Amino acid sequence: MRKPDHHILVCASFRGTEAKGKCIKKESLQLISYLEEELDDRGINAMVSSTGCLKLCEQGPIMVVYPQGYWYRSVTDENAVDEILDALEEGKPAQSRLLQIYGKGT
Image 1: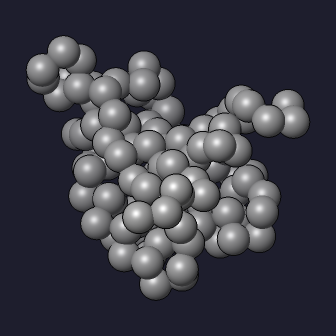
Image 2: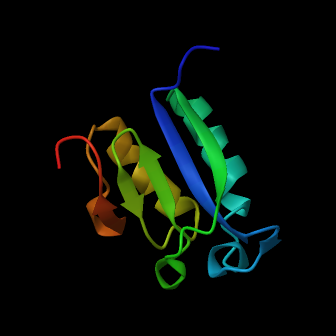
Image 3: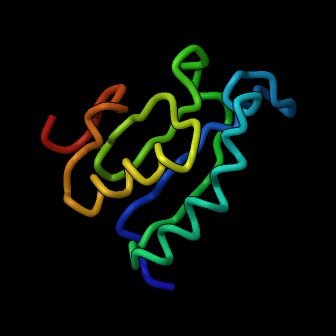
């Protein structure tokens, strides 16, 4: 396996060993299989991981794309994932869902 160009993190709301946050209650993990399918279909070299609670529950579900450092809010459905991946393919953030940008060039 070659090194991925992107690492996409999806909040799974775990605090310790229990899923207590809101992202998982808003079905954030159900989007992972769709996200992985879309990445494969689009030929985007990326790895997807679920995370512990990112502590932005009111803004969730939260998705983070590295190394760009794009933090996205309200990733609630396949349309949101498509919007984010469309922008990623264009080399820019999906502005309407952007929470914050950390990392390179900011």
